Length: 273
Image 1 (cartoon, rainbow, N blue to C red):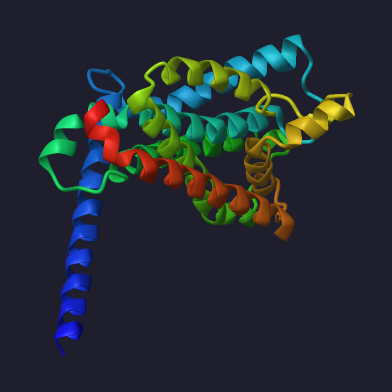
Image 2: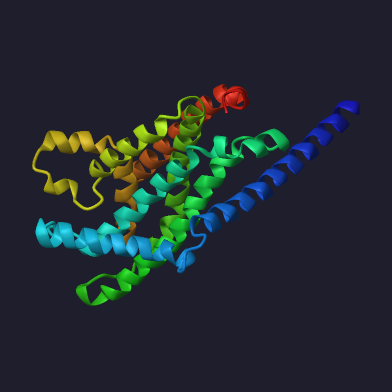
C-alpha cells in the first residue's frame, strides 16, 4: 500500500516537473525568436526574406554563371529547399552552442532539467523553419508556369521533421557540453559548418560530380539524406523504407551520442561556467 502510494506520488511529481520544463522551454523559445529580431524594422519577416534572398543569390551565381541548371528539379526551388533544410540544422546547433553559459543564472536559481536549454534552441529553429516553408511555398507558386507542381507528399514533412529534430538535438547536446569547457569550439565549428555546407548538395546535385569516389564519400554525409528526402517530397516521390531507416537511424544515433556526452558532463557545468 505504502509502496503504491509512493509510486503514485513519484509519478505525479515527475509529471509536474515535466510540465514545468515544457512551460519554461516554450517561454525560452518565444524569447529566442523575439531576441533574434529585436530592433529590426521588418522583425520576424526576416525569417521569410532571408531564405528568399539567399536563394536569389545562389540561383543567380550557380545557375547563370556556373550553369548549374542540369538538375532534375526547378533550380530556384532546388536551392531554396536545400538552403532551408541546412539552415535548420545550422541554426539549431550554432544557437545551442553557448546556451549553458548564457543561461548561468537560470541554471543556478531554478530547478529545471539542463536539457531544456539546448532543446529550446532546437525547437526555436523548427519554428523558424516553419516560416521558411512559407518562402518555399511562395517560390513554388511563382514557378508554377515553369512546371513546378504541388504534391500530396508535402504532407509527409511531418514524418521527416522528427528525424532531423533528433539529429540536430543530438549535435546540440554534444556541442553545448563541449563548449562549457572548450570555448574555442565555437570558432572551429563555424569553420566546419562552412566545409559541411559545401560537402552537402545545397546548390548542386551529386549527379553533376563526375568522380564516383567523391560521390560515395559525400553519401556518408547525413545531411545528404535529409535533403534528398525533403526534395523527394517536393517532387511527389514517396521515399523508400530504406531512406526512412537511414534518416531515423542517424537521428537516433546522434541523439544517443549527444545525450551520453551531455549526461556525462552536466555535473561539471556549474564548475566550468
